[in-house]
Amino acid sequence: MNKYISLAMILFLVCLCSCSGGGKSPAPETTQPKKVETQKKEKVKPVLIQEEKHKPEYMVSGTRDPFQPFELATPVNLAMGDPSKITDPLQKLSLSQIELVGIIMGQTNRALVQESSGIGYIITPGTLIGENSGIVTKISLGGVTIKQHFKDYMGRVNTREVVLSLRKEEGE
Image (cartoon, rainbow, N blue to C red; front, side, top):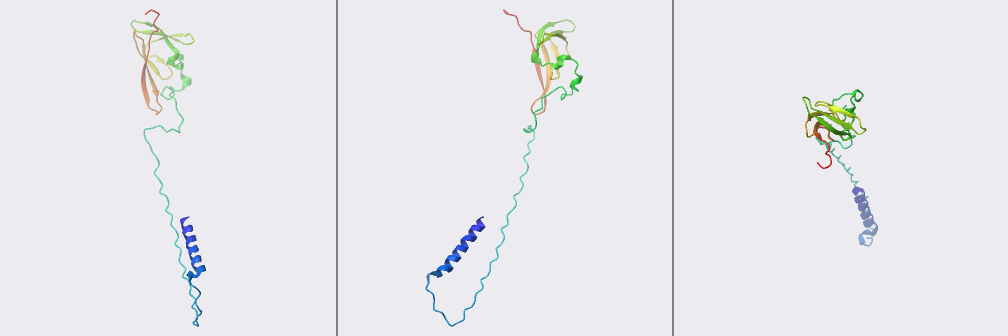
């Protein structure tokens, strides 16, 4: 674009100088024959446009791609197998739907849990419970400890321990 503007300005100045005669009155004609001057044509050099260098792609390692769909952790993703193979109803419930009703201490400690619909289940250490591959690790007088494995937003498997405790009566 600048090339065309500068070319137009040069043509305008040449035209202006040739039309005005340089401000001089015309000179008397001489008897000498005029030499026809041929104007030298200036070769216009093409403007070389440099190609833009390709910038390297933005690569970030260790972060989640924001354009990939968010994948929730399910027992299938955590090596539990096919969800149709889950036969235990405790594995289909989340821990928020389960309430600890009682604890039975003995040779093998057991606990009674109840789901939100009112159905009760007896659990022992090693019982699979919850939809995030939870497993009962410890039953004590204070409550039931459940270890859950889940995937975070980065896809890493994390472990969380949840303690279900007995609901206290009024006045305790």
